[in-house]
Amino acid sequence: MNSSNTPADLSGRKVAVPGGTGAVGEGVVRAYLAAGADVVVPTRTQERAEEFRRVLGEAATDRLHLVVHDYTTFAGAEQLADEMERRLGGVDDVVAPIGGWWAGKPLWEIDEADWQSAFVDLATAHMAVARAFVPRLSPRGAYVLVVGESAVTPIPGSGLVSMEQAALSMMRQVLAAELAGRQRVFTLLLGPVATRLTETGEPDQVTAGQVGDVAVAASAAKEAGREIRMRGRAEADAALALLRDPRPAGTGPVLAVSTMEPKRERRDDLVEVLAELAEQIRAEPGCLHYSVHRARGEDDGRLLVIQMFTSIQAFSEHSAKVAGQIPRLGALLATPPEPPTLFERLPLGDDTATEHLPA
Ligand SMILES: NC(=O)c1ccc[n+]([C@@H]2O[C@H](COP(=O)([O-])OP(=O)(O)OC[C@H]3O[C@@H](n4cnc5c(N)ncnc54)[C@H](OP(=O)(O)O)[C@@H]3O)[C@@H](O)[C@H]2O)c1
Image (tube, rainbow, N blue to C red; front, top):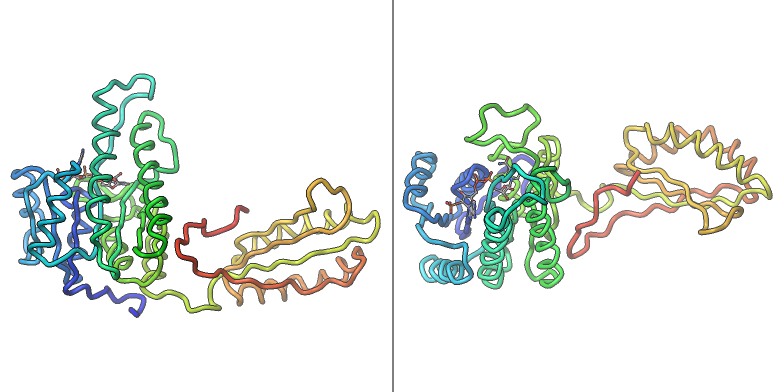
């Protein structure tokens, strides 16, 4: 296992990066080369190949295999995968930062040419690469899709991008369900990225290099595939730290669940106190979630309290803070308040769940 700031050593790994010549792809290619991997970058034109070699400069070592080849059709992707197996002896990982940005029209103004280029061509390229490479990946490898935040947030005037990126996001989920743990499939969901093509990066923007570092860490990690959101630097740093140094059991977020049985006709008073406490508890730095529930359709009776804290330490600090409130709550309860039952999350095959419960 890596310590949290040591880059992985992927010497001997064979990695394909279709779309690697692009703005985001450059960071991915550099990161895998720096990690010692053999990196295959297909590109559809000779000019693009030459330009990309110039862009990489000294980073273009003999472990970079830049090939002019159309990988965006089913047959083309299949040929590329065959050739990679023949020449390098197999495929371990694929990272697919294929495609770019499109903007300009609301959906009702697009024509067939827009639809073809911004949706069909890109979706076809991703599908072609996935179907050719996924069955050939080695068990230690990972398939990493790169998408934008537009996959989950509609951007007026860029609807085709949102729709195509949402389709890719679902493609990962379908692949993960169909593979049932046999291969790891990740999505890196990015906000705007600072790249060689951007004039000035905002300080909080993720860089193409960070995208590469997270992809490398996902390849090297043992953890199941999932969606990794990195819409700003803080999320990217957190994702990288977690991939490089997964927390051992018992140190992750804690879910605290308790029930309260109000005295007859005192439930409204109890809810009032809980509402007042909710504000303080949600403001605690370690609190991820606090909610109170009643049985569906019941105006009286038991309440269920669900709280989530970043760690057991944060939960202990919270318990100390609210200890003074117990007599006040106890006065409204039919049975003495019980300490909550604590739960921690089990790592499941495809851990796609959102990080937090909705607040
Ligand atoms: N740049 C950002 O700020 C940003 C932000 C969020 C998400 N993303 C996501 O990151 C991925 C890559 O974006 P990018 O900015 O690096 O794009 P880019 O600079 O345009 O590069 C994309 C690469 O994809 C390849 N490609 C294959 N089929 C293509 C097609 N039909 N149209 C366009 N390119 C095609 C091209 O490689 P060849 O021509 O060499 O074959 C190209 O170099 C996309 O999924 C994008 O949504 C980017």
